[in-house]
Length: 412
Image 1: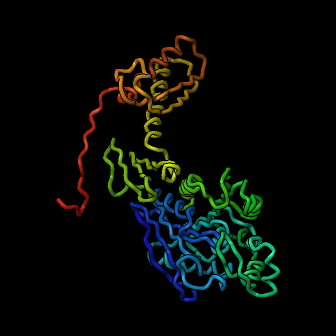
Image 2 (image 1 turned 90 degrees about the vertical axis):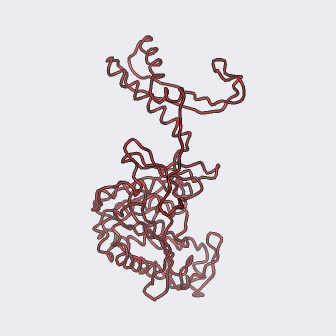
Image 3 (image 1 turned 180 degrees about the horizontal axis):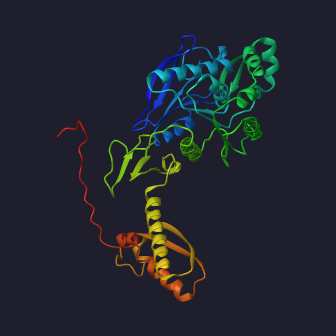
């Protein structure tokens, strides 16, 4: 469902702009998200991670720190300490409206901020950092050779990610005085550290230092191939999925329930998420996952496409059928691998097809059979592949009936 927009007050009484992403069903846990330095609540990674968590029943509050995005206040007056105060104010608002945040999630400098703020939010049970620096003073590196000028003049305008920001000496003094190692050592909450070994903005050594300073329970997940801002949608979706699974161990999360529009047994329910143009949420029994289109086609690439799912159904059914047959016949089939491709071809190019004009669909299925099998057994298994139920469905006449189900409030 669309995120709820609202404001809440920080310690100075300034209004901070916020978004609350709610799951469609009951809220199983509440998370508070802190974005990266000079980013905002609408940052792509923050948005995708928040949405991914809602699919697991976790509500997420993301907001613009003072002086950023739609929040009031002057950015030049902010410091790392004021960001921590903003996080505490956000947690206070959640506590009064939805529920205290059980999970704190921070990206880049936001990761350092949640580590520093965690001791002030008693209800928090778990902390997640993504590409976070071990020392908040790392942010001074973004100012390049302007640091001495900031120190001497007291305030200088610098350009960061193509935008001008006023940076004051107070920020440098504040980050220099932080002792994050002490906060990490005394965290007393479960910690999950995400970092990419190829992060060129905040090096992987920062993750090592955070992990080493922390006491158990602690976990590390490598985001191999990801960049610092998680620009690739699949990286953000992966983070959300792992966080949700990891949090189950440390939070008192109620059992996952079906969404409000429950699917009947043996039904599959597909609903638009309204995130991106094509993203769909699929519910099949107790299982929930996404379908989407590639970025090149206008999607978010947050899940497999419709034809990918079709091929997956055929491939899974083929492999399952071969396993059942092998077990029944006591064949020494160690493992099956099925590779599938879909394409459109000219009917005239298909000698065995009944259709002779126009275009038709072709699915290429390549089966690899591992194990001690003789030629006759291998041939029989290939024949059995054509007997898988999905294969038979796709090659037989299919009757699809379509009807409209009126939603509540729709005109009749």
